[in-house]
Amino acid sequence: MLTVHHLENSRSQRILWLLEELGVEYEIKRYGRDKQTGLAPPELKDIHPLGKAPVIDDDGVIVAESGAIIEYLANNYDDGRVRPPNGTPEALAYTYWLHYAEGSFMPLMIISLILARIDTAPMPFFVKPIARGITGKVRSGYLSANVKSNLAFVEQTLAHSKWFCGDMFTAADVQMSFPLEAAEVRIDLSGDYPHIDGFLRAIRARPAYKTALDRGGHYELMGGLGG
Ligand SMILES: N[C@@H](CCC(=O)N[C@@H](CS)C(=O)NCC(=O)O)C(=O)O
Image (cartoon, rainbow, N blue to C red; front, side, top):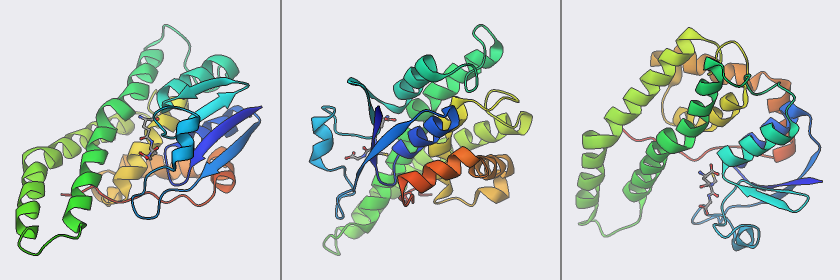
């Protein structure tokens, strides 16, 4: 039996979704986040040294890191439904988006989350303007421009095709769902990014996405996309 170590409100939701798309049987071990810090509980470190989600245990084979898990599931359980044929331009796009999601887009979301945490952290009143000054500089000098150019790039891609690798739904769409859902928490995508908005509506209409939500439990992402 395949077990998904699933942290509430997290990236592991998309692994449940992919398993539903593939029709693979699995069980869920669900973990709650620490109420104060939002971090994963220490028990996750018993499964993998980094203690992050997702991690899967497939009959003793432990795989961590969303992209690696998706590749493992596609290699072992896909009969061509969620991955373009090798050697095609779509296959190259597939590899690109699988890496881009965590390699390029998510770091921006994490920086944004950290800045928002600093802005709202309890601190002496005289320190607050200094802290705000620093977070504002990071936003204006780096974050905002990069978020904009990345969203524009994704928007342009989805203006050309319904899914990230063309007309075929793939696991790259599953991987890209989380960064876009994280972006959606703070930005009204329907205005400047109608194709991203349409993509999010399209994934949410998929039966497998809905079943994964039912099985994974409450799913609500933390805010933090400042500026
Ligand atoms: N790049 C990794 C990121 C893993 C990660 O940071 N997971 C978050 C959940 S969204 C986590 O476990 N956070 C809790 C913590 O850091 O304690 C992946 O895609 O698997």
